[in-house]
Length: 243
Image (cartoon, rainbow, N blue to C red):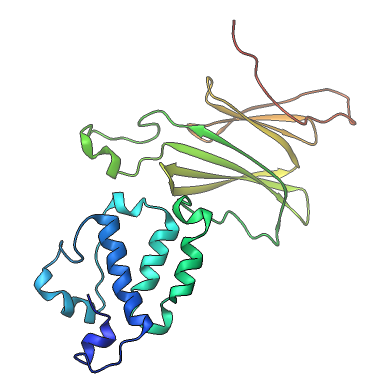
């Protein structure tokens, strides 16, 4: 599988490192998919497909591979040689610890607007089919992209005491949905997930406890933790096991 600039000029173009990098991307694809490139298309026309900008297709299972591996493969099969990484770049990236482990990266806000020095977060887990209707219970369930967990991130504004929660839904290792709940003029001090009752509890600097449902993301209730006390604030929440 030759680089498009070599195919376009029928081999008259000089082979360079960047041309080899393109071929390396096809080797990466074979290792990732255990298939030949374009085996899902007409392999006899692979050169024509490459010239017209086509690249091998990936299944949902293959797209769940570590994101840096996928990013490197896509960069290596770029149309223009200058857009492909060098062999040194590939070695540096593949030698990093996160190369084989980083599954997904998301951005939950502008770092210039939100305070990230005291980040609060928790994870709530969904039961099967929570908030999702699915009548198909066969082995294709893994390809549907139904969230299995929600990550709750608290964002605190740097300019004022405005807070919000970013809820990121995950299907295994990939983010599939994101929504934001505005909490108003407060500073969240701690967050806790109560698994049995399927609720998230938030404690702010006004000693107000707010309760949110992890299934509907709606606010269920709120109450003051300590009445007539301004100096004491919640710093941690936990639950006691039932006897």
